[in-house]
Amino acid sequence: MTGKGEAKDPFPSHAALAAGVVAVGMVIAALLPRVPETRLSALWGVGLAAVTGAVALVLKRRAVKQDLNAALKMVGVVFALRAVAVLVGLLGVVSRGLAAVPFIAGFFGVYFALQWIEVSYVMAASKGAAGGDE
Image 1 (cartoon, rainbow, N blue to C red):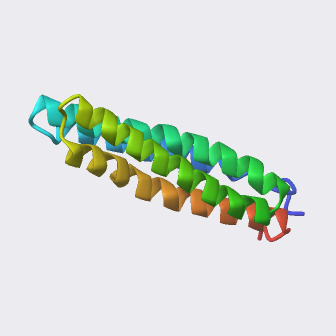
Image 2 (cartoon, one colour; image 1 turned 90 degrees about the vertical axis):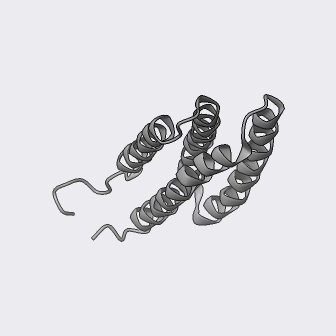
């Protein structure tokens, strides 16, 4: 035992990182596009990535508490959730006459960073559960 406790929960720090990524994505989506319609489309993409990222992190947290196998299965579930979300979001943006490219750029710009945070969380949480804190 190290005096810091038996196992530190990595979830709060990873959730804070994810929130930071979303905040940066929102700022970029709000400031970079010059055309209001493009800005709106990019903001929708970032927002949808943020929502699916929050759901993904919570689902992976629950799964890691069970075992690593459950966490790996959850990766597939979350991927399917995001695929449906992108399709629905893209159809929604296009049906409103907004550009698709800013939506895709906003979504995947945030998604890739969130994916790394989620993978890092699963690794840290499974390492902690296995007793490899040090």
